[in-house]
Image (tube, rainbow, N blue to C red; front, side):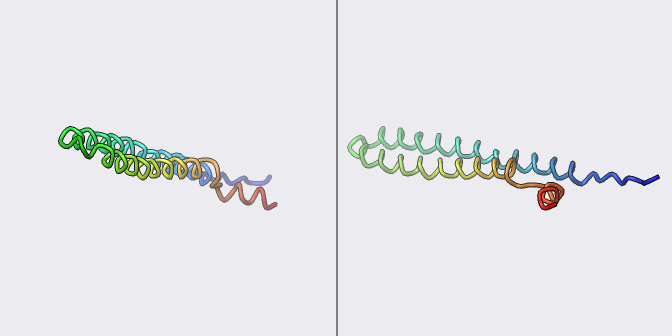
Length: 96
């Protein structure tokens, strides 16, 4: 009778993959706080000096775009970790 060895490594890799994807989504909360800070600063600066509202708005949009890029990179990494990266066993199944 053949003895079968149970390997728990794929389950551990799946768990680590889920934790990594969850950790990558934490950056989305940071991006939301950053966007709030950008527009809060815009409101404060326009209230102090209304004559510079147009210039301040341009800087605020730039800050928003850069902060939103961080959020897009974080969500991209979460999806890459979740769906693209495979465990060693899955790679071996594909290769064979």
